[in-house]
Every structure is written in structure tokens, then in C-alpha cells.
Image (cartoon, rainbow, N blue to C red; front, top):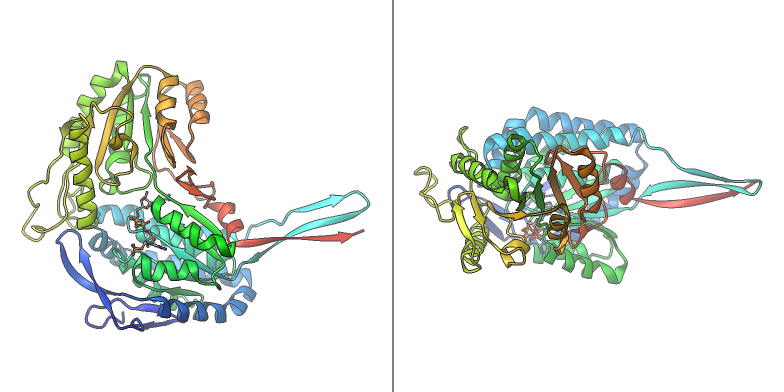
Amino acid sequence: MPTELNKILNFIDGQFDGPVGGKYLDNIEPATGQPYSQVPDSDSRDVDQAVAAAEKAFPEWSGTSTAERSRVLLRIADLIERDLEKFARAESVDTGKPLSLARSLDIPRASSNFRFFATAILHTENEAHVMDGVAFNYTLRQPRGVVGLISPWNLPLYLLSWKIAPAIAVGNTAVAKPSELTPMTAFLLCEICREAGLPNGVLNIVHGTGPNVGSAITAHPKVGTISFTGGTVTGRKVAEAGAPLFKKISLELGGKNPNIIFADANLDAAIVGSLRSSFANQGQVCLCGSRVFVERSAYDEFVRRFVEKTAQLQLGDPLESTTDQGAIVSRTQLEKVKFYVGLAREEGGKITVGGSAPPPPNDRCRDGFFFPPTVITGLPVASRVNREEIFGPVITITPFESEEEVIGYANDNEYGLASSVWTQNLNRAHRVAEQIHTGTVWVNCWLVRDLRVPFGGMKQSGVGREGGNEALHFFTEAKNICIAK
Ligand code: NAP
């Protein structure tokens, strides 16, 4: 791997290189609070070079046969799997998440993304519409050209590969920017792309900050398509930058997801499932259920047992195999979590478990960014803590009296990303799922992903859908060809 002095490098036109301006930022390991590598602090000059490389590569790559594009993507998936341990370790060190989670979820899902889209393109159908005696129309889907892909820090390789794979599978070329907080797995991916035989310029990765690199990608006149995942405030900026040029934009944004437990649920399963949906990756999954609602008759038992289980979660060094809860991604994010716990106290909430900084798990992690899983009860539904996205290991639990009331609670929020419903009553499951305004509703489960289904948010959780055909359609331009009879 071409690191010089532990430096991460940009990947442009198949070559690793430093940023034009020669500046770097420290890449901090969240578990230790110390820099462990440096990441390019690139700017619009690097983005210009990347776009030029992508533009140059487009004619050949878009003209490459589907079978060959599929073969290269499958090879990338194979190589990620071969290097699973290296990727998992890099992901854990970069993000602070438990190594066991990176190994079992993030990295396997990243290789699945490549495998899925590599094979999906072999099985697409083109629509044809016949007009009696007049003409027939068929739909031709063509790659759009140079696409911009911007992703956040919480699931860095998984979310970036979820964009890269469909974008290049259908023949586009890409300029991608991972979060500068978590650049390492994208760096490792570039080496694998080279080894897999991906032609130069098809994938270009420019590291750096959102204001410098992200905004240069979204504003670039030759990047007509943007796929963005991140916070709602940033998503608004991306939409504003793209609107004057009528860019095609997909936005996957924040959430404040309801997790609804009816008294007729299998309570054991609901507790185990809710523990995951509350605290997986220290609550830093956009799909985490941070607002838990429990039907009044089951409320006391649920809270008692849930709090007991939460207290048993092992907070520790992310690299230790016994760790359930690792570090928060950055000092800024840790401060945000602490702020909301303080606000919960001011708003009248009761901290039933967690709530204050724990002792460091070991000497290596003495300056790390740790916060324990925290459960808050007794907060009004309309409180800020119950409405705003915290994106950390902090959840609220609120009782409800009826189906109608909890549907109202669930929908009374500007976000609409995902929800979970726990019940053994099949009719209720359908009825409630239909009425909740979120892009995904999980019934008696959480984070189950079928890559064929549409994925995305309602309301301020996003615009557009990713996944399966939705992604293949987003990354292609549909053209109608009408042939007279
Ligand atoms: P963020 O601050 O919005 O950043 C997301 C990405 O955008 C980063 O790469 C960031 O770069 C970049 N960026 C920042 N300013 C930009 C600008 N002006 N123009 C273009 N790009 C810019 O989000 P985050 O804090 O990394 O991630 C957490 C958020 O992502 C949460 O709200 C979470 O819910 C959401 N999320 C949503 C989904 C989903 O599928 N809906 C999935 C995961 C996460 P820097 O890192 O350098 O600032």
C-alpha cells in the first residue's frame, strides 16, 4: 500500500497522489483520541483533476460490455472478502466501532453491494410499450456520465460502496468523497480496484472536508448527478448547490426513528431487537430507533428489563473481542451527545441508565471518546430531545395508550427514515405499517436489508430512493425511442 509516512493519498486516474495544495489533516483514532494517520486536505483543484480523469474514462467504460463490467465488480467483491480482516480493523480503528461489528456487518455488506450490482446488471429488462397499429416505444437506459458520490462517517465503506457499485456497474465514472473523519477503508478500496482491473479514472477518490471537497464536487458543472448520504442540514446545501444546474440528486438524510412495542409483542424478542436498534454502532446508525414507544400495560416490565440489559452492555476498547460498545466517532460528536443528555435533564427527563462519561476502558483508550448507552424516560413527546436527531447511544422511552396515539407520536416529526413495530397481531402490523410515514417499516425485526428493495426516507429524511432497480434507474438516464409501424 503506497502510504508515505502513514499518509492516506487521493486516488485519481488510477494513481495515488498527495493533494495539489500539499496540506493534510490529522486522522484521529476515536478510541485513543490520538492521530494515527494523515488525510489529504484537498480542494477544488484536486476535484478538477478527478473530474477530468473521470470524464476521460467515461467513453471507454460506458462502452465496455455489461459482462466485463460485471466481472470487474465481482473481482472487487472477492478481494474485499479476501482482505476482510484488514478492512475490518481499518474500519474499527477509523470509526471507533467494535471490530466484531465491522467484521460481521460493515465489510461483508460492502462486498455484498459489489456482488449484488455486478449481477443485477446481467438481469435488467427494458420496457416496451406497443401502440396498436401506430408505433412501439422502448426505454433505453444509458449511463449519465461523471457522477459525484458523497458519504458520511458512520458506515464508511458500506455506504460508499452502496453508491460506487451501482454507479459504475451501469457504466458511469465517479468522483467520490468519504468523510474526512473516516477515510481509511476508501483508501484500501482503491488498491483493490486497481488489483481487480478497474480501468484508470473509473473511480476517483478525493479526500478532504465537506466545505472544500464536497462542495467542489456538488458545484462542478461536469458532475451532473450527485448521490449524497449525510445530515439533513448538509443535504439542504447539496440541493441548493445542484438546483441552478438542474442536477439529478439523491439525498439520504437524517432520522429520528420510532420503535413501537405493543403489549402483544413477544417481549423477549422486542427487548433484544430494541437493544440492537438503540445502541448498534453506539447509536450511530441513521436507522437506529432512538424514540422507543411502549404500550402502557407492558411499559414497566419493558423498561425494567431493557435497562437491566443496557447496563450489561460491555463498553470497551473497540479492538477487544468482548466489547459491545466502542467509541463515539469524534470529540465533536461526543460533545453533541453530552449536550443532549444535559438538555434531557433540563427538559425533565429521568436518566435511568448511563448519562455520564465512563472511566476509560484501558490505558490505551484513556483519551478516547466514550459515552455509555443511555436511557431516558419521562420526557414529553414534544421535547427537543424527543424531536431532534442525536446520533449517539441515547434513547428515550415513552408510554402510549392506543394505536391511534402512537401513530400520531411516530408521525409527529420532521424526519421519516425508518421505524420498527413489534406485535404478534398480523392485522395490526399491516394497519400500523401502512400509516407510519417512514421509508422503511420493520415488523418484529430491525436492520434486515434485502438489496432489491427501495431504500430511502420520507419528509426531511431524503429525496429519492437507493437500492435495487431504484439505484440502477437513478444512475441511468431513461430515453424513450418511439418507432412508427
Ligand atoms: P454530514 O456532516 O452531513 O456529512 C456527510 C458528508 O457530506 C461528509 O462526507 C461531509 O464531509 C460532506 N459535506 C459536508 N459539508 C458539505 C457540503 N457543503 N457539500 C458537500 N458535502 C459536504 O453528515 P455526517 O455527520 O458525516 O453523518 C451523520 C448524518 O448522516 C446523520 O444525520 C445520519 O442520520 C445521516 N445518515 C443518513 C443515512 C441514510 O441512509 N439516510 C445513512 C447514514 C447516515 P466532512 O465529513 O468532511 O464534513
